[in-house]
Length: 475
Image (cartoon, rainbow, N blue to C red; front, side):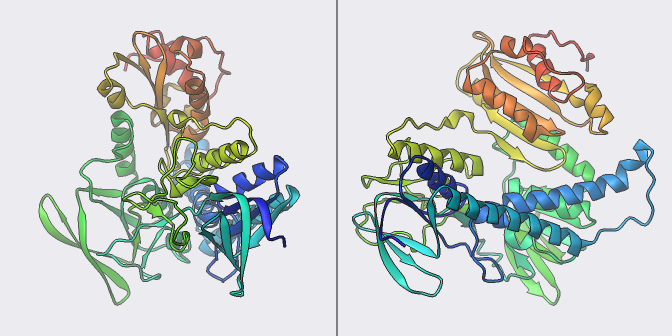
């Protein structure tokens, strides 16, 4: 192992490993240090996303959705099943296999691109030195011309509902249940809470979601959020808004929860309680005294538009810096920084970062909501196309939701796209491209979409913005 590199990346998650790989592709000498440790004590690259977030949660969402469809939709297709049951152990084994394959793939990618992969802990020292602590506790000082901090984030704890790892768990713990809880409580109606709640509700749990805020999905377009709340309620998720948890304690094999809403103090009891109130940047032990790297009031590493810190030649990317905590945002920042370090062009368009919630129906959006566009002083026009009018969605037995376009009524430029319905996370890619190239509604209207496809909903929404939709009845 060398003591000196062109670039040292601290963190091997969705921000760190792309930064390291791109730096390797740019013919720089690179080391990537990652300290993720699994429950069994093994180390793995990939960070939270691959080990305990994006990938394992999507595996469980897929399994649980297939189970739900088999029990509730297959009959409409003429498919009869008997003695339907869920083998949770087999589901978890499949998930673990996917995670192991993906994390192993990252290790192979690092090696293939000439990156020195170091498992353990990295700490930034003054003068672009990095203290590397190996799994056996031995320490070594490394140096670099450039350092990239990609330490990620961790679940945010709740003082009134402290984790015990068994009954009161964080998002990682909720991915590891070995049986379906009869009564599941979820604190937080954000992306993580809704996805985890959906997994176990589909498998038979009675799920209650306690959200402290009075509004549902405040970051989303109001029309989309209202439709989502209606669909989740229809599915049996009990979502209580304005419910502030004041206490949670394990009592025997259950968790007793006290919360307060508009009607006063209430009690609830669950077999498992998931705390999913958000995530916070992880910088514990990352910075030694005298590095010059600054944190803001919320603990995020302060950076400029190109992820440079206050210390020359030290960058920070991903969840540990400002902006949405999304794996794809982190990846683009990592690639941008690696290219900038190599003297190449690098840029991240923060106005065109999509968000996706992988529930059923899926939700995805990019750009401005209708409310944000109006608040900015723009004269707005909108077009909405319901999936119930889509032949493809009807054939899939997935007619819920809609595609919505928000555009400037004067210039016709697309400002935002909001989709709730089947495969919304895939459909949003076209919308991201539209925003990236400042497309107009007319551009989307004149783009031929294959028939019958779900993507026609975006086409028809663009037509609907000018009251020219072809396949939509007056609804």
